[in-house]
Image 1 (cartoon, helix red, strand yellow):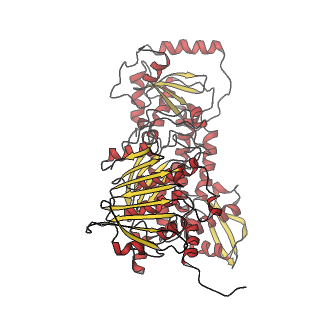
Image 2: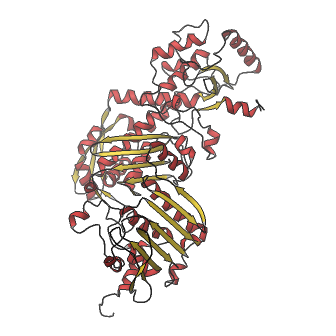
Image 3: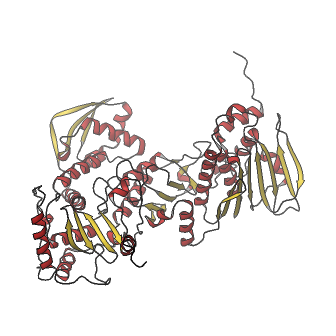
Length: 623
């Protein structure tokens, strides 16, 4: 083996570039973040051949002093931190002092800058084996322009790993989207091969911010999302979360920012996934644009050179705050906030629909008396004391299809019952889901509301109502536990055993009693009654893994809810069960008062809306 020696500056920079510069998109991220740190209010990004041939970033920031230009291309040269205290409370996007040195080691770089207090601009360029920085005067307005040409021209092996021009530009554009979403007060423009892709003005007002999100992501996202604005325990969360009906086949519309920095954190992903757990169809992914603000001292951004990962000082607090905020926001959505639902066929096919955002936390909450009062207003001669079948214990219904004669007879009876005309125009007392007018094939309820026609999957809707009521009932009664006749011995790692001791009180509150009987051994002495048929050893092991990883776990709660969901499914009204008009109206009123009634326990939509303009278009009315 050869003797130990120091690497040349160029080779050291190229090694560092392997972490910082993977493709043109990484260069755009680093340079635009520098521009934002310099106080820029307008940033222009120009690319050719996906950024491989040319990248030019212009800004109107404070500029760089002439004496600092050559130094700016050196490793570990930065103006953003000076002491360890600065590193522990980083407020800027960049701070490591590696970006310009790494970029200049694998490209032909020219940096031109004009400081506000200077009379003229200066330019520095670096190229060649020794990366000597050459400084010369130049003409340039106040601000900085960085021009990067021929990426990986001197490292052909790495250039071979670049993808096609289209692929590289798609990555570049994605980074520009993230940066534009992080700073609404800055104008951005993006050009590719002399063609303008994005031209975004500063967005100071909330409506302008929504327009920017719609332009960068999708207009349907804003129409199908809930606005979040919550604050607690020194944490603040703002942004938008998509409703379950606006789900994606992949996680390509998920943006999370911590103090203005876009991150991909496992703790955050876990908390958001939990919030969507029983309202999202399996295999689908939520869409969100969220901004978390907290004291910079409580988050460590110096985890990876790309700064995509962060580490929270109190991860459990952040996890619980995110979960509870999003869980409540999704639970507060009611049918009167969703005039345009998504049909099951659309959801299965990956299509989305327009859903209005929530207008208030208590929107759509109706009392039992209100639900009953609506029935006689709609149905002449019906008693207001009619009690829907789901208000009592669930029963098994006959699963037999009605004959044609039965349908005709039913329609005759229905016609005799409905001599009172429905309102011709929307009225103040019209409920969000309207009033039932018929039942289709014993599966769907057809209702008329102010917007048009509402179609409800009665089993899916009743399943959600029953499920939510079961959860409330179990929570009110508390967790019933039972001692095990023969305690279960678990072999775990020493770290897992330490975690079990640390969170013993949390386990006890869930009805689980654990005792440590050895360095790597636990004894399960008591479990909840609802989980007596569950695989308790596997459940506890998974829960310990969650506690180690995230500082919290809801495995028992998830398993309990899974059992309650099964009970709700079997105890709900079945297909081909004929419902009377009062029963159908009672179900609609319960849907309006139930959390997450837009989806069943499995994430399938429970109702959809066809507006009058859509129906008119279908039948060519008005043409």
